[in-house]
Amino acid sequence: MTVQLTPGAKRHLLDASPSPQEPWYINDHTLIRDESGTWHVFGIWHPEPAAPLDETFFLHATTDTLPDGTWTVHDPVLHARTELGETHVWAPHVIRHDGRYWMFYCGGTEDHTRYRIELATSDDLFTWVHHPGGPLFEDGFDARDPMVVRDAERDRWLLYYTKTETVDGGHHEVGVRTSDDLITWSEPSVAYRSEQTGTYGGPTESPFVVQVGEQWVLFVCESGIYDCTLAYASDDPMRFTDDGRIDVELDEHCAEIVEDPANGCTWITGGGWGRGGLSIRELGIEELPIGDQGAAAGD
Image (cartoon, rainbow, N blue to C red; front, top):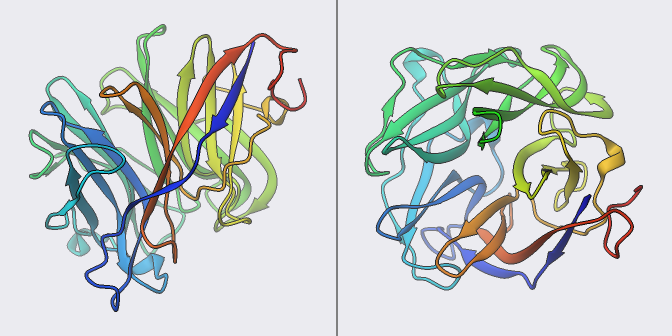
């Protein structure tokens, strides 16, 4: 089996700039629909131009519907805790579980080999409480961009994030850790390893994983081409390779995949520096037998 991805027409979703004369960017972000049907977006939010090491809180905005709803911008949340050594906060990801909302995010420090994956929880998506046990784990180089998904078949949680082969650099990787309770996480396995090496950036940023039938699809941001998301299919959520590359053009930066129960749509969103906020478009996702039209490149 393989997976076919069919993107629709891109449209503008949200610009949270205070005014046209004062543009702010939205970078790595997350969308979640609450029990009442209201959509919430959280994301890196900062005045232009780009200043990633000065991104110290998250945007919070809400709308009643996607993609054409009217947005309300609320007070920012989860400011960097400088008293604990956090210098910036990046890449929130929110899920709902056990009657609460769980936000996983990166807490950056001056030591790029010991970035922290943090957890905060909320009952209403407005008031957040940090996990009292401190960071879930530390890793490098610039370990960041956490994303959590449920592996129901194996009764476990999977946390994907951007890292490098060693904490000092090496091959750019998507790491994956497992958990039974969302708090205690295993040591990392390599979900995907790029041939590229380095420290900053790399082609494994903003990992996002979805299950499609018996297949899993990993989306990653190729930072060498700013507006470019790559996708890989695999029957094993713990391991993706270049052989599973899906033949599709996605010009999103920091893409998120959003399931919309109101209309049955799957959306892909994007943002980034100098992009005027967030974009959105439909994304068709279909599992196909290998050999069918639209099969992944290399199959």
